[in-house]
Image 1 (tube, rainbow, N blue to C red):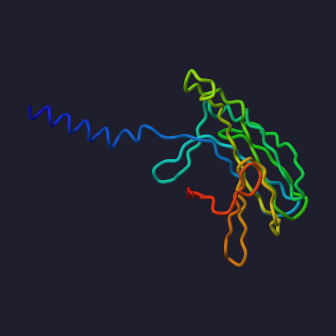
Image 2: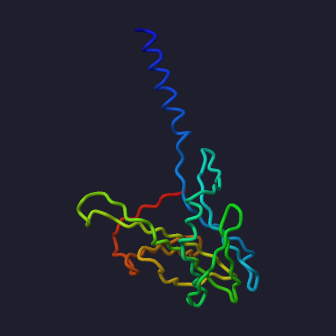
Length: 186
């Protein structure tokens, strides 16, 4: 009886401490590389992988990595004009680029609406089609003021004299005062 308890205790111990090491959540992310200067190329890298226990990002390739091709990426320049960014596979990431032509804030928006429907019940209203979004900001020189929302749900952050103010949007309109906002630091 005692050996069975010992074996069960050891199995539970190993399950609790080793199982998290065997299961890692994976996700897409975007990295934006550039000098922050006008007329100098900016490179956008879209990756797939996981973050380990030490907060290190690890890029992986496989079927999910190939699904990056399903994303459509767009650049909104400092004037608010929209242009498409083409991504090409490059080793462990997909890569695209643009060249800023003036000072201001440039926004990069990626969207994948080709995900399969998640069937959760026999009632079609309970089933959902997920949409993946990626959004990044790149500043050249002095950032632009009053950046318009690009997505149905968006957040604008403004800094005045070291005080940051968050402006959340829902359905591309400012939310009403008093709306709860939850911020998760990653």
